Length: 214
Picture 1: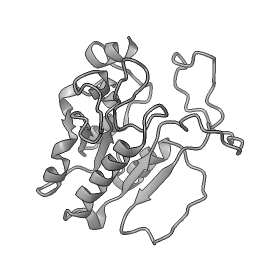
Picture 2: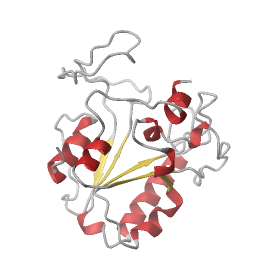
Picture 3: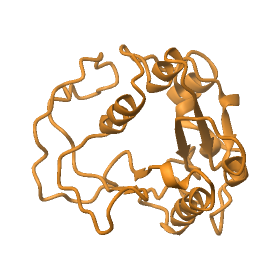
Picture 4: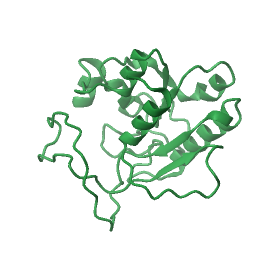
């Protein structure tokens, strides 16, 4: 119900805004894609169900029409591509049934193959374009997928947003379990393993550092 309301009615509003609003305010541009056609699953879930609804479109200020079909991504990169930031979402498969089976999101109840194909298609599209030499592809996840992590999550500075979506009163003063993150760029030396502590907002901070939106 929350997803439907955010997609079609009111949208999620963040106290400090979104990176997309900050880019717009700085006269910078972004582009959004999703694997809407579920092109990579061997036994795909229905293509036009909840799994084909992009979560990013649930934010206030972003209309569903802004989210393009991923099947145009490689072709789009062959022409003029004046976007400083691109955000790509997978297909969530059987999201309505809460299993996410048959998509490309690599949720625990599904296999990993479709997601690997989506990642490979994204890399190949960038690698075979004129934008490769000054690109950075970040592959990461929103959660740990339920896997045990033997490292105690370190303390963190709470972001200060309202906690209306925290059902158990979590105050965000501690990071969660680690999630995979891979950065792909010709500017990164081969075999680099970075052991610094990052969180999901590190991506936003990197965009701010590169393009300085206020």
